[in-house]
Length: 241
Ligand SMILES: Cc1cc2nc3c(=O)[nH]c(=O)nc-3n(C[C@H](O)[C@H](O)[C@H](O)COP(=O)(O)OP(=O)(O)OC[C@H]3O[C@@H](n4cnc5c(N)ncnc54)[C@H](O)[C@@H]3O)c2cc1C
Image (cartoon, rainbow, N blue to C red; front, side, top):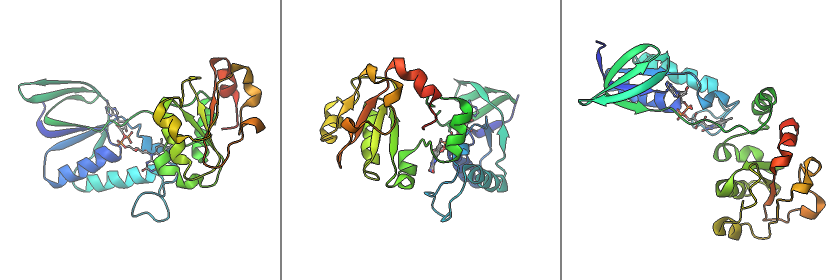
């Protein structure tokens, strides 16, 4: 029977490691099990993290956090939690490192990116170069006055485009699902004053890019463009992102 822990932390990204630092400093008996796929590992250089005025890469941030947690005895172990059950007030986790039992479990498993349909190598190179980004709140500033294409879905995509509109006059919302309803919802529509949308499948590959002249956006508008299913292959082979 394994030792009973106070807390099992599942996930060793920024959230799990921050929790681990606090919990270890409370002298609680904890373990951190991490599958090693933190989204933070994708951050080429973050400038929004307080305390790092010259920026810090995601890998370095994780390394620093791991070292800080380890200083208090919280070593992030590489492994995967595969199953979690609760019986008689005790959690039992089946993990790649063997069974673990704990009074409490802290889920810090993060989220997964929904990558656009493009080859992995191109995707990774674009992220490394800061051409493809996943976090408007983190990176809007970096895109100040640049030409921005937002690969969005539904109303959420519309709101992200509107948010980025405060950094650049040149924002095009590309509906990656080819959903003609994008931006039609009253809240998003009313905010996109003067915007126009395109869902015409005949546009095809040739019309992708920063927008045809007839679609040029006036200031304070977001251009909406839809990628219909028939044009998905164009998106896959495109190098323009
Ligand atoms: C390209 C890119 C750039 C970004 N830039 C910034 C930025 O500049 N500034 C900023 O603040 N944020 C940025 N972010 C967002 C930031 O990376 C996330 O907000 C942050 O990583 C979330 O931390 P987390 O600990 O919640 O999750 P994650 O970092 O995703 O960590 C979760 C961990 O849990 C592990 N895990 C999941 N399931 C299991 C399981 N069953 N068993 C064991 N382990 C498991 C995963 O492998 C992973 O290691 C960016 C994200 C991306 C993709």
